[in-house]
Image 1 (cartoon, rainbow, N blue to C red):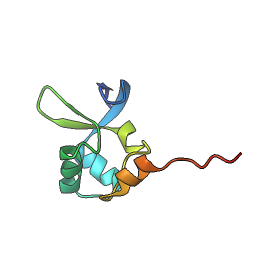
Image 2: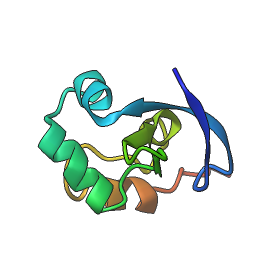
Image 3: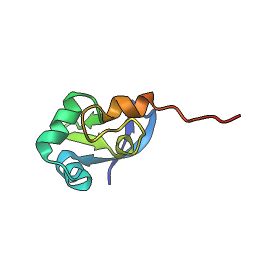
Length: 82
């Protein structure tokens, strides 16, 4: 897998093309492009114009497969017991 610097993760991460990520996550390419448009996943644009998706952004707690999940994941706070 190619590695690129992800500006959102602030580190070098592995990246895959949209088709492979869609297959990996189990969604259509159209859904992936919607997530990219909504900035739900991190992307890098290759000099050739090809869009590559940061695989680390698929593993973050804020990643959501369905609308509303991202907000719920970001709003979730762990329970602290005295």
